Image 1 (cartoon, rainbow, N blue to C red):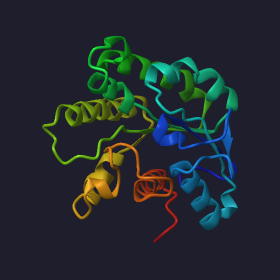
Image 2 (cartoon, rainbow, N blue to C red):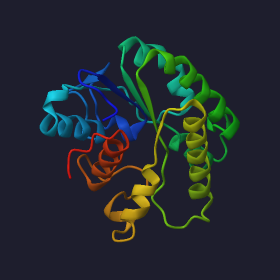
Image 3 (tube, rainbow, N blue to C red):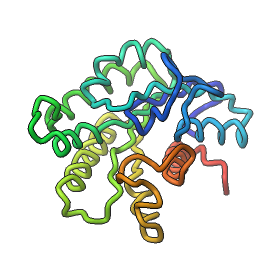
Image 4 (cartoon, one colour):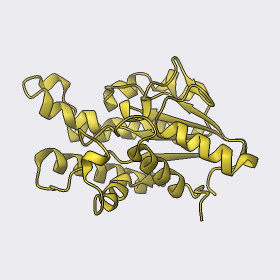
Length: 219
């Protein structure tokens, strides 16, 4: 297992991580919201209670990496985590498509890379580990412009994880595998947000994270 006993594990990102978490800082057991951070915490507590991992959540709905950078000190570093998990990027892409006439809201690939580097460099030496969860889009049509752009941003996250020798979590791979037997509407109506808390989508995210950090408790 990569995450050791007694660790403070902080999840941050956008609405996929937020899911109604308590403000200002969502903490286990009751403040994590209804998404994958709560599932991760619950599974670790139920199946690996000896680890006593304390889970926190500072995701904020609608955030881009630009927004995350602005609150990084207070919402991440000031919480003194041992492990930091980041999932950010879908809104950076989405604004290009749902706000096509407001380019000030767009985050291009160059800004995304530059800002992600800043987050990693501000954090890497202060924690035991970082997990970079790739942005995803649940759609089989890889020629769709938004699908293609999300996958391009995800490849950037993989490259940064390799460069800085931190952990990369490929949730797109998990969703692609699930879609072999389940239409995206059974996971996410809008191809991004899992359908409700504790939905199959959030279980897929939790499973992918726990397997990536070698804490998956089910044989």
